[in-house]
Length: 438
Image: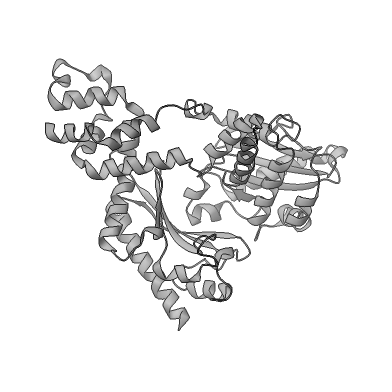
């Protein structure tokens, strides 16, 4: 990095705006990261219809409807539960007597250690009991989950209060989207698997209440948005600015990346000399801004390279955030049910794999997403097209009743591999659409 590079970076108007956009807001979760125990406590609060978040039982309904949406293929208790508790029944029932308790604590083995299943949705009026395994982790197996079921049933069977309750079992993991298909298969079909994206419906509803000056919904909005992929307009603008800066000043961003491994305790007199020293001070003074710039470099590079090797991609075909990029194949646009209000019926998402990534070496997982409700019935037969695509993407035809289906294409790709694999997969998808149309 030359001094001219640094000064061009520091004088870039986008940097000034990024610094202002990145200043800590009134969002509690911008300042603190929650522990798993705190997550469980806040989730229990959100799902309690008698708490002061102004949502009543709506969050419970969002949770149960999300469970139903992904329950296709489940067996035993969950199959019976969601055969009875359909979206229509859920939406027209009252869960005013329901609550999430941590008092029905059941001991289980977790990776050789003693642990507790301590999150349960209970409704004495509707007689339902839903066991929630929060933040399961990819190390779980179907055998372990079966032991959890038996532990719950042993506790319930000894108490006549629960004799005629409907039972369900839900794994809730924010990182579920990063699981490979073999990891998902290893969890079996006994439990319903959910990430936190079902909270987006709750956050959207609460945002409307905030617009009507119901400030009691503020904490619920902040928590639900933090757990989902939702980005505020300010966060989206921050991502755009960071991406533009990363592309415009690559040598400076590369120098910032090298500073990630440096502590203040490593400073020496020479550390603060010259352009490198000035950048070191800037990094120390604007740590969060610099972390965003370094973190988004992989995403910004991928977007730039995709546009370079696929110049036919239009602006509307690529969306990106801080750690992800989504791309829709050109031929899929004609299959959309509504170009104005709908979303892509099929698309690829590259997401940074946080567990194996380093600031200087980001890794990405590539997934195919299929949204059956976004296909135009007048243009194509979605089940037939899905069957056709299964030839190139085995497993896609499974769980055909689910609103969304995710197929893992590749894992732990470096940026160059991510670009190459994404292009090849987009080509395969376009070819499959054309061959189906013929």
